Length: 123
Image 1 (cartoon, rainbow, N blue to C red):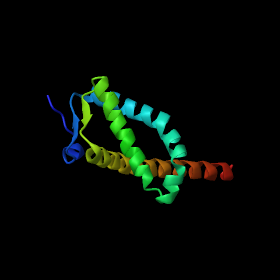
Image 2 (tube, rainbow, N blue to C red):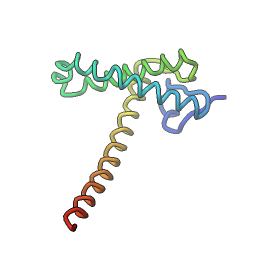
Image 3 (cartoon, rainbow, N blue to C red):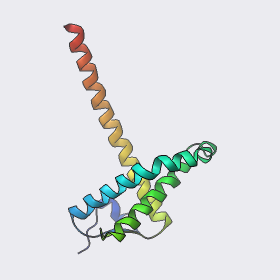
């Protein structure tokens, strides 16, 4: 049984099979790979990131997305990435969604912080 999310169907080369449990496992793998390797890769490639004005971070994200696909395939999560461009487009989608969610959560946290400050000033 082949399962595809709406955004993933537009990115040919990224294939997910299985249900929500396998996608949750893949999300855990992706988070683990990002937590372990992303800071190290950013530190080691800092001159390239500066030289390319931050565009090299897209290649780091692509590498991490591809590596997550390999690890997920090894553990039988049913997720494959068929090459560089599908990994690049997939990492671009993940980066954009992450950016939007970060902005939404940050605004909510700032609103809570402001309301706590107003409550403390009134007391």
